[in-house]
Image (cartoon, rainbow over all chains, first blue to last red; front, top):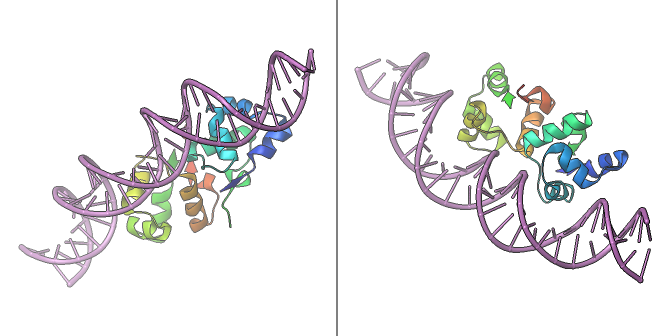
Length: 64
Length: 64
DNA sequence: TTTTGAGGTAAAGTTTGTTTTACATATTAT
DNA sequence: ATAATATGTAAAACAAACTTTACCTCAAAA
């Protein structure tokens, strides 16, 4: 799975720590997701979508 | 998280085993998700959405 | 009335997601 | 040039997702 977290963060000038706090997860979790180490859980993906107010599919995408 | 798997299955007259096979997971996984025992992973949610050709949010919903 | 198919469940085990702590490197501000 | 902030990473531990095996109940079919 690819994701646009880094870009969405940049658009808002948020740090990984900022995003982590907004989502109530650790900064390492954000870093790991951004670096593709693992995918978020579905509940966390929903929180991300709600935070950015866009569909999950426009933030996370299956890799071809 | 709530989900509409049971209804989507029923509309297609699919068994839990049918759906499990289509998604390449075990029947117990489908049963557990339908019964709310746990949420699917994000990759599995994407497979479900692709199979039913609808957005993740129209299949899975955060509980109020 | 026996068999079959569908759904529910449980235990044990593996894999994946997440936290905490900790440190290292890079970038920015003073 | 130094200090502070942002990012990358790693290990250990725990939690959640998923598999396999196995068994049980119920309803419908044969």
